[in-house]
Image 1 (cartoon, rainbow, N blue to C red):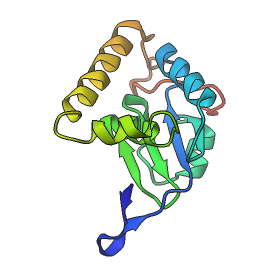
Image 2: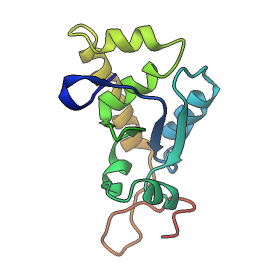
Image 3: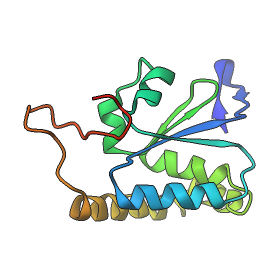
Image 4: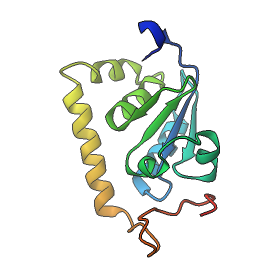
Length: 144
């Protein structure tokens, strides 16, 4: 799925999905992913949590609260539309659809879906920030 060094494909054996634990849509999608038959195991970790920071110390954790981020076990990073597609690619029943979503015909559909989800989140999410001006959401267990 991901291109490694020298143009060869790097094998992906495990993916970590960073999701916003304060977003009802994100939590619902996390629960849906857990119930699916996975061809590639998915570790679902709250974005910007202590666990996420421990696993990926060099990552922009504030950015992972803005859009879904998926990290491959070889260091591949997928964000936004590509992250959703790679999640589907990891699932037995959805891999063929993920391949279609990467085509010129499918990519606009994938992008529209991600934009619709982002709009839903913006309308339903609680405001972030605790008044200190950093704008960060507090994630349960993040130690913030």
